[in-house]
Image 1 (cartoon, rainbow, N blue to C red):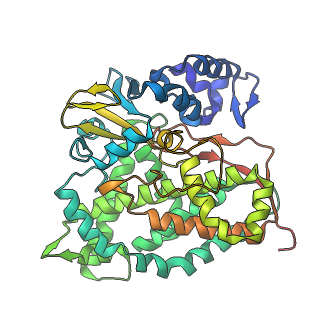
Image 2: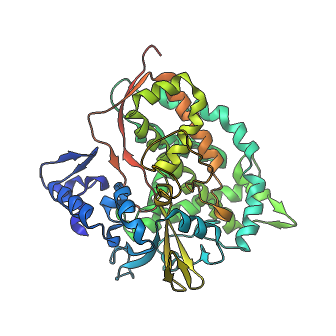
Image 3: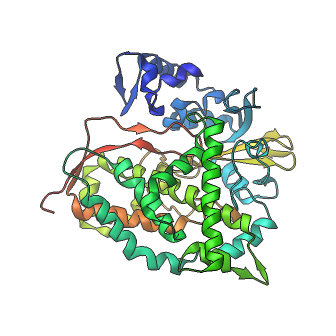
Length: 441
């Protein structure tokens, strides 16, 4: 596994030791990593599902392994975290029917028992790592605070921030992730929570530290998480003393049938919104731009017909799902596609694999706007359907319309696009350099 770190997607250029780089499929690979990618592409072992190469480009692995799904694979190699010396294995669900069924069967596939959380490696996320009845109570309470009306009132402000970010972008080559797709969602979440948006770099650092698997030590992770929890603890305490027009105040004041949120639950929601609220949207925005830059005819079609914007967003969610994998634990023995998974086993739900399954979406590797996308699982299904899905869609709509207004064309930059490989949870870019032609704007 250590040799795979020659893959520059992890940002570890210093490991290349002067070796000549080869550009391949818009990713930079060292000669060794290129050979490794070719080797993996011929073998497609389940144990490579979460290798850096497969995190950066999972679809060949999904295609070749789907027929064998559920597959037993290495979710995390041993030695990454203290106390986890052996590889952490899981059962990977790659078929649409199995993923859809597992997402709707929360009694069998529990979200509350995560081995990484139980070992203190990652913090639990409220709702994401909860089962009923606790999940039901928390969802009722947060639904009182996180409303569609609150999101709708933010739309003009989001549009203003989108314009400000693009105003700062010159006519030269620009990394659209670092300059736009990362700061916009973090600023939006900060505004919702009522915290200073200019601190978005710190918020992003906290978020990355929580999700990252390979690029941060446990000590660094815990330091960042402790900073984050202390910060939100102070904010929640301040809102209890004096409320404001923000989501933290709404969470403090939320009440259903005489129940309200405890302090630690409010902190948990802040953590959830900061991490899930920015990571999913950042990756969605980057994936949209990456798809459209290679489809200039579609870009022009969108400029002329904005009614297609929503279709592009939904097809992007299916075609390049921003959430790659989340874990569940079986509460009983269960059979999936003829394979028995024992009770107490870790199960990896691969959202992107389900959304590229031909049984769910004919010709799945084609980007098409004429699909029925009501059943894609990019935002999940059942009780764990993404709380922030409406906000992510609003940010994507505003972003795409603003880019279409300003830029007659998109072109790839001279620097390579780099997929993130620090976490198997998400699918997106670390860097996406583009040339944005402002025309007469």
